[in-house]
Length: 112
Image 1 (cartoon, rainbow, N blue to C red):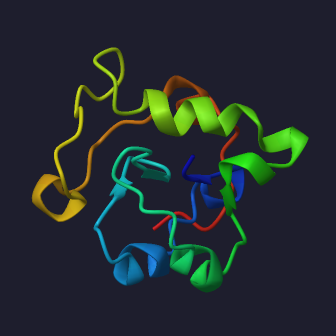
Image 2: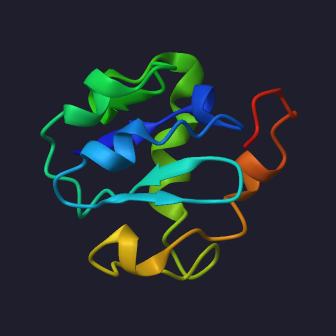
C-alpha cells in the first residue's frame, strides 16, 4: 500500500510534498500531483508537509476520496500517461495532462 493524493490537491499543487519526498515518487500532472504506488516507500513525510491535507495512506482514504487510489495508480498506466515506473519524477518533469477523473473535476481557484 502507498500514499495517495486526493481531490484537495486539484488546481492547487502546492509542491511541498515533492520537495520533501526522499524517493522522488510524486509526479506533476496538469492539475494535480500523483504518487507512484510502486515507488512510494510509505515514509509519510509528504503527509506532514501538505498544506491542503490532500495526502492519505491508501488504507485510510475517506470514503469521498476512495476513487483516488485508482486515479493515482492508473495515472501511470498505458491508457493515461504511459509513464510506467520511470524511477523518479525529476527526470520526467511535468506531464501536461491528467487522469480523466481529474481532468473532468470542476475547476477551483488557486491554479498556478
